[in-house]
Length: 307
Image (cartoon, rainbow, N blue to C red):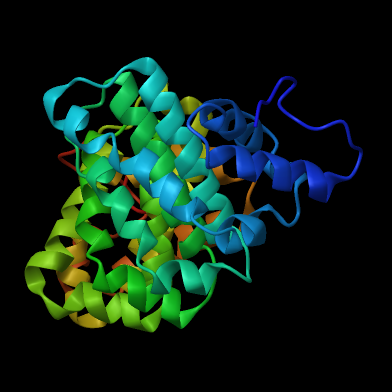
């Protein structure tokens, strides 16, 4: 099959997408078909279902994705290879997002093939592209309120992978990985998972604290979303009365600065969460000397008071 113009001469969207999917099976037409499908994936309502049920196609996408493993370790990734892998991962996200293919997707443990891209320690452009595209797949799963999805993510140790992305990734990666942690904490099973081990709880608290301390001008574009996720994580953690005194020591005063309150002020829900967080911290018996309406006497940082 030759993809001259990349698509057949038809106005039938279903025939068009089936033609492109068949093109993935051939090495001669794979790259072009992959590129066209990726760019137009939002225009095809049935793309996820067709990808999942087309014989051998998910295997083809897996082959493209796993082909990057060895170059990933040796810094041998070419720009063209990164583009192809990111396109294949984007089609994975399409499958992960669709209600008819989401559960079969996780039951086949497909997301674990993306974890090597989440566990890299470099923030160079090629690594960051692979990281953020992979996080997009996990984020699509996490945004759905489905206990089976959360249980699956917890069973595959997504928590430490996301914490690593929060530390080494750039702003967008940090935003998406923090969103995933937030969505997991929103579930009772996810919150319990966080508190089962003291080391795990401390890792999350410390990682969030570092994230806040390192906020800078480069984060401006995604800052409102990043702050929303950070505040949401802290609020959920603060609901555990037993650990509130320890949590207070990991919530940087910087987060409670009026500068950040003003950034989230346009979102009443986030502002309400920030106020509730302050309220929860104030109820901690060990923070009575800190939680006042005035800044601490020996510090230039503002106390936790949100107008």
